[in-house]
Image (cartoon, rainbow, N blue to C red; front, side):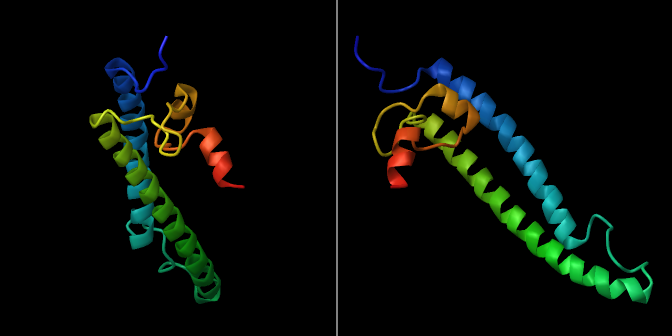
Length: 126
């Protein structure tokens, strides 16, 4: 029997559902990170005594830098999921961009935006 070259439409729909669920959660997390960066969450030092305000502002700077990094990572994840949806539409989803073979469904369920099989990913690290 010939080796499968792409996932069936039913399989692609299963992956689409997984991606849409992860995308919704990721966008919610991103919005929360953005809100904390803009101060919309109400956690600031305005109601703090001057002694603690200096310490809190230093911690806030570090916290904002970390939150910014997290927000950037989250946006990259969202973009990866959106690109995966495009690949589903093109019926190229789940095909390793290095080997041209199908990425195992277990990997895609765990990392739905994957574009490399484990084999290709490991070969790239050498």
